[in-house]
Length: 412
Image (cartoon, rainbow, N blue to C red; front, top):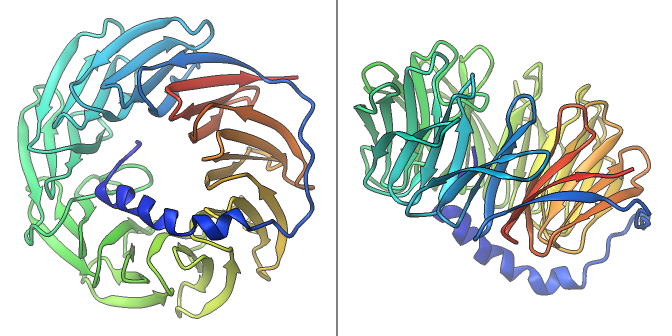
């Protein structure tokens, strides 16, 4: 689910400060050649910037959401508009339920809504007192959890739209950004909910809304997640640290320090390593048992994200220094630099890790050979590209942009 926040808006100011230096920065690794393939695209047009897009399961329909106050459903092959789901403010996120009979949307108009995915009929309205940042169903789709810009999360009956309870920041310090467990908001058995606010992540009883534990930082908490066994919590913050906590007692176990705000963190599969990335222009790898710093991956400017490949032999990072980079995950040595002409917002490998897909403020998404770094194809928009993803068989790529379009690309 796409989420927006005041923090994201304020971060743009930080980005601008690096602009002058970025303009003179030249990547130090091998230059790549522009691909000769001519991509074709099906265009899905909104009246404002597109905030996100996703296929349905069989990839016959496309769901998009936009600054133009609508989510829209399209025929993914012809580009024909099938449904328009209207809010009175920007739509910040949207998703189908499991059987794709309903669509959940969230909006800056202070409401989340549920729609019939076949007719577009409005089924439920869940009003909030502020900008709704995001929302999701629980596993059996009897409840919906939303989070908003008024320091609260809300749990709703998904059949009636009745508000069941509110998870309210007891300090009322800042907005509640969300809650996450593997892209869901509840823990595995849905007995607990994890949220984060200005100075703390918190665990709540998912049935009563009772606050169970708080995990405090000195500045804004940017994100949080459980480990697999749900015995630990990993948090990261603008106070220049990521921290590991005992999820049963709230005891602080490890502090992982950067030189500026930490924008993301994750465990590796065996939970023996932690990868963090920061506005201090680095990603760092730590021993998850001792907190010892193992090595640092250095960019020129703020690192926007990072991830391991499947066998954890490589790490992919992306940055506002206009590059994505691939690193040896054992030594920290650089392997590839993939260069854009402006901030790189995201990057991902394809399934067999022979290709890397990147997207950027430079108005393009690009596909690269993951072994050589050769640029294979450029997918152009007329404004910054906010996201991109392959379809299941990787014959098409979906992109969305501030240029008011989502596009599905094919090429030979």
